[in-house]
Amino acid sequence: MAFDYDLFVIGAGSGGTRAARMSAALGARVAIAEELHLGGTCVNVGCIPKKLFVYGSHFAEDFEDGAAYGWTTSGETFDWPTLRDNKTREIERLNGVYEGLLEGPGAEIIRDHASLVDAHAVTVGNETVTAENILIATGSRAIVPPFPGDDLVITSDEAFYLDAFPERVVIIGGGYIAVEFAGIFRGLGADTTLAYRGPLFLRGFDGGVREFVAAELSEKNVTLRFDTTVESVTRAADGLIVRTHAGDVLEADVVLCATGRAPNTAGLNLSAAGVDLDSSGGVRVDDRYRTTAPHIRAIGDVIGGLQLTPVAIAEGMCIAYNLFGGEDREVDYEEIPTAVFCQPNIGTVGPTEEDARRRFPALTVFESTFRPLKHTLTGRAERTMMKLLVDGDTDRVVAAHMVGPDAGEIIQGLSVAIKAGATKADFDRTIGIHPTAAEEFVTMREARA
Ligand code: NDP
Image (cartoon, rainbow, N blue to C red; front, side, top):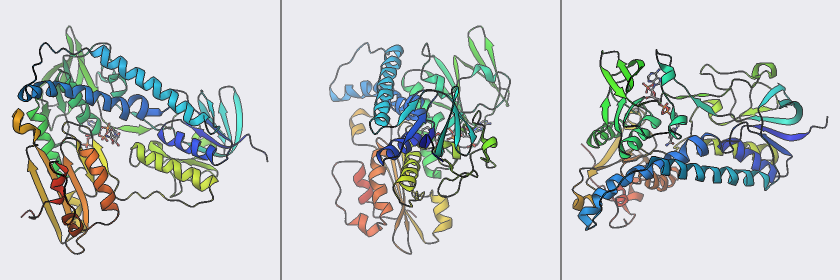
């Protein structure tokens, strides 16, 4: 049977775009459908605008710190529409870049909603087209748990486009988005409260890192309310009223719910094509991203797992090379580094100390906390934390954790060494770059008791 396309991709986010353009570059006839903006969550309402906001929010401290270095600044004011709209212009530019990335190698972009008909057919707009292979890369969406007044809260999607900058913000949640936006709103001047349901936020991260970040955010006047469940949000004459299960009342102009993201599976007609979901609502796939329907694959946030752009991109590469490059690639999910752009940043690769103790009985921990050189003049209380976990049986460095400026940049470099199996002896014989914070990772000699 002759198909219209060799590959039809549904969703032009990080994973879908990569699979489409690499497949087209390998000679496949490719179409990609996107009903919203090219680039998906990462480009439009995720990583990129978030990082721009993080940069924007740090200027408040930079202006203050400048005084100790002899700079006189006065009358600094922050104009939200300038940051918001400059960010939006950059996102629109990136939408165009994505268009070029797809069209360059010849992928056809279809700006419409697509849904499955069967294993080889897709309805897009009013048309039905056929493809030898179909890839579902529809990503995820922010979820808000049901509670009275849940319609009054926003998610990160809306946070990027607020009409007015809020004076008071309550953030519900304790994951990546909650702590990143806590730093953004606080840095830009909002009175910011983070309400998390458990005893300590950032579940899944190293215990020491979580404690350290909690102390640093408190130091920056983010109000942390742990063991706090939001019961309701109501509208008041002057903003919103948040009521907690303990009977506390918090006032806010904006309530941001950052309570996780769910796979985008609705409206795809998955069951008609025989595509099953797993118990967490993601598309069920095998280790080559094959769904339960022949010829239909799925990657990225829609399959659950790690909701990270570089992971979706790696999966997209895998799809292209395996389908059209004659290869049999697998994604290596071990030692995936990640950063949280709270302030200061978290960078991490490898297991937490708690996990590593279970996996490596002879674990040795090297840890250092210090005041960054920059703040010896400014007097700012911000501190940096670094931790290396070493398997005493093999001397391999199994993890590195950091909280401090540019932690993501530093851990990205270290993750290559850790991936390559570097030992503590390798770290020890590496000469540091002085004066940097990162040199601490190659000069830690005393194991923690
Ligand atoms: P996360 O899964 O990171 O965190 C969700 C938070 O919400 C957790 O603290 C969770 O608590 C809490 N929560 C979940 N359900 C409820 C509920 N019903 N009531 C109250 N609290 C609840 O999700 P995010 O939304 O922060 O981010 C989504 C994903 O996007 C991240 O997991 C990450 O993969 C990705 N991301 C990556 C970034 C990066 O790479 N820098 C930046 C932003 C997002 P508990 O821990 O108790 O379950």
